[in-house]
Length: 158
Image 1: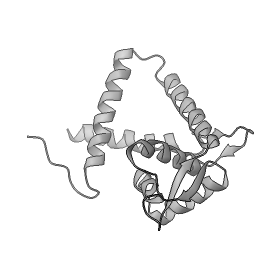
Image 2: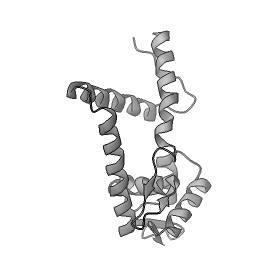
Image 3: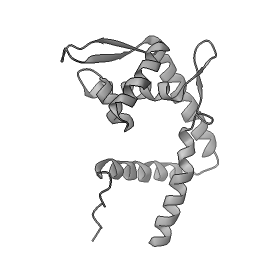
């Protein structure tokens, strides 16, 4: 098992490159590169939106696992780029609600298509059953990571 954990650690360190700006860039309607932080804010807003009355900077911070001050700066850049709007909160007058603009929604669609196209190319020669298994096991792993507090050792299987 120790060898498998070592191999898993190695693979995860190598996979962090999936989200670097050099590999995962997206362009806007005018052909300009969009900062990865803005793409992540758009994704956080889009994925959080269905589960909450409104999306806040705190929701973005939680989704991206960053400090609220970092999320606020990221949201500012995305707002300056015209991807999100800060509006008055209907729930809490001390907060701002975030709303994706049409440009933000279009950027998300392009970013998603780019990611799926790239992933499809990576696994193009794989049997469909292997792709399905990878998706299922990786989803299970991501769920376990999300449920395990930082710094805490997960319970050992019996």
